[in-house]
Amino acid sequence: MGQLDKIYIYNVFPLLAGKFTDWASHFSRASRMGFNWIFLNPVQRPGMSGSLYSIADYYGFNPLLLDDTSSKRPEDQVRELLKGAGSMGLHVMIDLVVNHCSVDSPITESHPEWFLREEDGSIAHPFADENGKKVVWGDLARFDHESSKDREGLYRYFHAIVKHLLELGFRGFRCDAAYQVPQDFWSRLISEVKEAYPEVLFFAETLGCTPSETRRTADAGFDYIFNSSKWWDFKSPWLMKQYVVTRDIAPSISFPESHDTVRLCEELDGNIDGIKQRYLFCALFSAGIMIPIGFEFGFRKKLHVVETRPENWEETGIDLTGFIADVNGIKGEHAIFLEDSPTLVLQADNPEILLMWKGSSRSDAEALLIMNKDVQNPQRFYAENIRDYLNGGAPIIDISPEKALGHVPTPFSVDLRPGGCIVLAVPQE
Image (cartoon, rainbow, N blue to C red; front, side, top):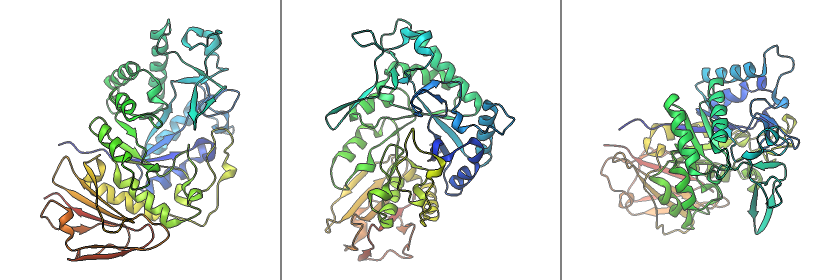
């Protein structure tokens, strides 16, 4: 069996990080926490709205990110940035936005045939349904990958952009709104790119679509998808159902918050136990893990694709970098946490305890998470024999990031602090 990839992603949000020449400290901190991938939201020149996702020039760069005092060309500033990341052991992926561009992009004039049209002939805008209300993004123009009279020209345009980004030094692509783009587009692009760059990875952004849509998108050849574990209440069956539907197609990546969500620290009103609980769960639930910049410091202000600036950096007095590094270390030392392995939620006598079993599909390794769902109060877990929840006969070890037990007793009784979690492992025999 081949070695599993480690996909630990740290999202450096460009508008918060500032100019390219100021990013080295963020990369260094990510590396120290054990992350090996950097994800960048779009860094190309935006249109009139200023939104990172409203790209006007796919070959230009956002003026807010360029160092005007540097004698280097914009492309060379990016190359130097990516070279510096590589020297720290970091690969860098970038958002690949092919579903739409800025409505004021020059290509709407030079290639009008590439765009979807409304009945009156005007360019169509992307939209979404938010709680029954149709939200239209008027600053965006939607590409017509399905029925454009020049589908080949549109495809070749984005193929050339991907090649350009790879030549700059990027090594992966988080494909924005991947499920809104035809499967045959992704199948061809991924296949052709990997012929020339076999190490490049493609990550499908599939949040908001159904499990069947996720499965269909992932089946286009994506290396990873993102799952919805961030919204799980630790009891509803939907997460496990989604997990089963996609697990055999592509491994998934969890996140406790993202650039699109409310900050977890704000959501939990500063409850550090809850923040630790969510990070540990996300890191050990699925093959990959991702956090946005500032999560480790308990930032509360939501990231904004137009308005965020370096001045929004927060001084919180919170520092979870050591805890995150410890959890990432556990994930890396036990390969069962690097795969989307068979996972079951087991019955616990205490309803406030999440008892989750994982069994590797690649070896006989097992793991058992015993987690206090309650982030306000301690809870007790008791088992006459903890082996009743496991299959193998190898020794059980406690690999918890905090206050691990030197010996796993029988009977097993433990008082879990608010949001606390014990992680037991039965390593491969």
